[in-house]
Image 1 (cartoon, rainbow, N blue to C red):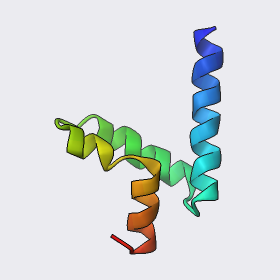
Image 2 (image 1 turned 135 degrees about the horizontal axis):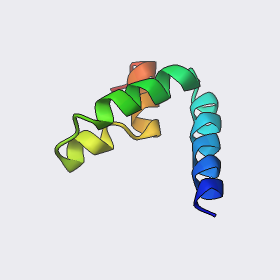
Image 3 (image 1 turned 120 degrees about the vertical axis):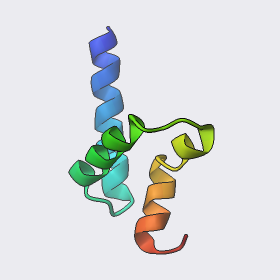
Length: 60
């Protein structure tokens, strides 16, 4: 059952990246690389999809 939930979560992230005009592979690669360096909640929040979409669009 955990595999099903993991797969669904990953598919959801991919579709949300597409919906926010982000290239899914690049977004996930960036999240996984930066996730290893996260030390604070603020740093974690910067990885959230809507935050990444705003940065990509130049609104932040």
